[in-house]
Image (cartoon, one colour):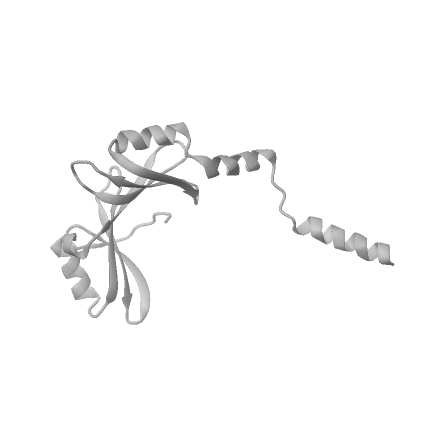
Amino acid sequence: MQTLIISLLAAAQLATTPHHSEGQKAEYQQHQREAPRAVQQRFHRDYPEATDTRWNYSQGRWNADFTDHSRYDRGEMVAHYDHTGRHVDSHIPYDRNDVPDPVIRHVEKRYPGSKDQYYTRIERPGSKALFQITMNFKGRHTTRYVDDEGRERTYSGVH
């Protein structure tokens, strides 16, 4: 009887222990080090004056957190790339004073009394930029997307 209980416990342990192939282990270890060469090359082409770059991998994307010192002076930002090096988008935190007036007016009109507003500009290759606005509206945390002209838009990014 004791042998049967021990065998059942061992079987339960094996059934609940995750099994990873060697390929999955190698992929995980690769993601812990640095982005693939194609991703890094594209990043350096896109942001040649980037400094303090820190890479991480999540949700199937490579993310570069860095400071941009280009003539556009975008400051701290995060750029997202897929595994082939395709630039998905970049997120740039904005001070409210730097947000275009139509965006501010839209938020004030559509979400009166909202609090704790945070603005992030999302730049996407081949598409118009958007502002992601996170705020507390009527006691609930909400996120909205607005273009530079103050029109609400949808965004289905993975972030």
